[in-house]
Length: 52
Length: 549
Image (cartoon, each protein chain N blue to C red):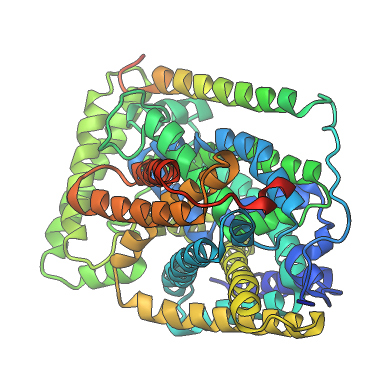
C-alpha cells in the first residue's frame, strides 16, 4: 500500500516544563481539581438559601 | 439588530473564515490535511479541543441553565481533569507511537479488522447523527434571533464550514478554533460585566451574589448520591469521568486534535490545558446565567424569552390573565428581593419565585418549544450596546461552525482512512487520498446540512438524541481499555465485548430510569467483563504487532 503514513518523523517524548516529570504534573492537576471542588462546595454552602 | 450590528456580524464571519483559510494554506498532503503535519503547539491544540466541545448551543443553553436551574450543571465536568490525566498517561503516547491517523486504525493493529470496522461503524453512526444535530440546534435558535429562515441559516453556516474545512483541513479548523475560543471568552467577560453594571445602583455585586444564592441559583456542588439524579458530585466524577474518557480517548473529533501535536509532550500539555480550564470556564458561564437571573429580578423580563412563541401566546385568549398574574408575581418578587438584600429571610423570595415560575410554566404549556435557549440571547439583544450585539451573535454563530467543522473533519478522516483506504482502494498515492479526503469533507458537510433540515422537524427529539450520545461511548471506551491494558484479549473476544456492551447500554436505557451519565460506566464495564471473560475461555493466538505499542 502506497497510501499515507501518519508520521515519518520519530515521536519525541520530552519532559514537561517547570515540574520536570509528568507524574508530578498529573498530581498537580488532580490536586487542583480537589481544591476546585472544595472551593465550589464552600461556595455552595455559603450561599445556599437560608445560610445567612 | 441595528445596521452596525449586521456589519459587525458579517465582518466577524468573513474574518474568521479568511483567517482559517490563510492559516490552513499549504495543506497539500494527507499528513498535512488530516494531522497538520504534526506541527501544532500545545496551546492551539488545547484551545481547539475546548472550542470543538463548546458548541453554540452549549454557549446559549448553559447560561440559560444557570438562569433556570442554577449552577449544578458544572458537576457534569468534574470527571474531565481525571480523564485528561489518565489519557495523558495512556492513550496519548500509545496513539502517537502507533503512528495512526485515527483511533480505530489502532484497533486493527491491536486486534483485527472486524473490531476496527465495528467501532468505526459505531463512530460514524453516532457522529453522523451528532453532526446534523450540532448544526440544527444552534440554527433553530439563531434563525429566530436573526429573523432568517432555518434553511438559510443552515446553508450559510454549513457553506462557510465546508469552505474552510475542505480547503484548509485540520490546520484551518484548529486555527479558526483558537480565534473562536479567545473571542468566546472575551464575549463572556463583556456579558458578565454588563449584567453587573446594569444592576440598580443600590444593588452591589455582593448583593447580587447573595440574591442568586437565596434563589437557589448557586447550587454548584451536591454531595448526595442518587443514581437517578442527573447532576451531583458522584455522577460527575464517575459517570462524567467515564464519558470524558470515552469522548477524549475514543472519539476521533478529539483524538485527531491531539494527534496533530509535534510531540507527545505538546499533546499532553494541550489536554492538560483543557483539564485545568474547563471546570472554571463552565463555572463562569453558569455564574453569568445566575447573574442574568438577578438582573431580571429588577428589570421586567418577558413572559417568554422565545420571541416567536411570545408573539403567538400574546394572541391567545389566555394571555391577558397570564400577563396580569405575571406582573403581580414580578412585583412581589422584586419587593421580596429588596427585603432579602436588607437581611430579611429568604422564604419570601423563594415563594415569589415559585409564583413567577408557575405563571411561566402555564405560558409554556401554550407553546411548542422551551425558551431556556433564548434567555441569554434575549439579554444580549435587549441590553447590549450597539455593535456588541452583532459581535456576540457572530461569536455564537461561529461557535456553532467550530463544533461542526471539527465533526465533519473527523468524519471525513475516518471515512477516508478506515473505510475508503482500508476497504475500497488500497493502492492509491498521496494525491489520490488527499482528493478523497476533501471529497469526504464535502460529503459530510452536505450531509450535515441535509440532516439538520430533516432534524428540525423532529422537535424535542433533538434534545433526546443529544442526551443519549452516551448510548455509544461506553462500549467504545471499553474496547480501548481492553486494547491498552489487557494484552491477553484478542480480536474476537473484543468484538463480542463491544456487541454485548452495546446491548447492555440499550437495555439499561430502555428498561431503567438510571441517569444517562451512568450508561458510559455500564457499557465500558460490560465490554471489559465480556472481552476479558471470553479471552480466558477462548483459544485465539496472540497478535504479534502489539509489541510496537
